[in-house]
Length: 332
Image (cartoon, rainbow, N blue to C red; front, side, top):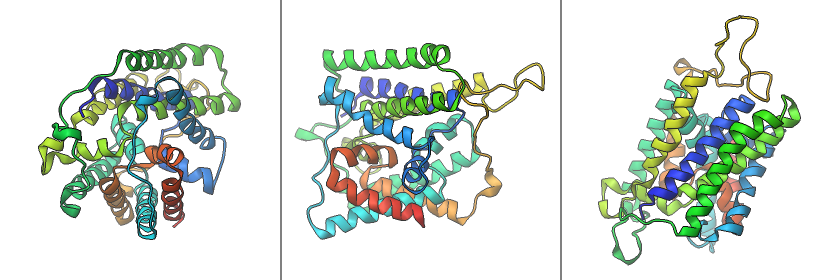
């Protein structure tokens, strides 16, 4: 169902987590690289992010459990397990070779006006759209309960609304007031904020509906069955990418905006910016096929790396199979 309030507030949290990591730690919020790095090359940059992402389930469970997504049943046969491993493999191999996913390319890359991210997003979004609608006759796009059109709006309860608004306000206070005033530029502070950013981003995934695979698949339904179309995730463009773009244009991270060349701007907590340096000229066949492979996995199951982490915790049997495939794909 169309959730304009849930998704808008969740998108603001996605914006806060991703832009906060950029402005405070000088890094782009690329979940796929953080996730694979946690296993293949763990360090103080990726482990706290994923720890924060996993921890985001706890406050939602404690204060508003009705906001947690529901999932299809865990795989119960060898064939279902193999299919889950295969989808995870596509997700891992695709995001590794496509150099990113919905967080790194779509949310962060588009807001940084990166032509390379625009190309990657166009490839994986188009592939996901076509896959969801035409592979298997579009039957993997679930209808909404009771035959109600999925574009019918639903609104949060007063309790859910209070929790979501309170969380959003607390996040803004943390990022704009507490972090700049309390944390000093150091490796320890970077680690602390990495955890905070992961926590904020994870809660944003849950509130927005990005963590719900059925909701993601319904966003793709516009081509074949408009009654199953849920426009909610379009609001992430407005309240996630939009504010990130404004922040990037106003703060100009990575650019020398000072009056003196010997006093370049720095992130709040880090000594240097760590922004992608690859350009359109670096695009090769692996980049294109990687983005397409990620789009295929996204369109088949409605899951990208960030939501996959959350689902792996909430649904461990699925998580073991999916993460095994993801790590295998990331290693190749």
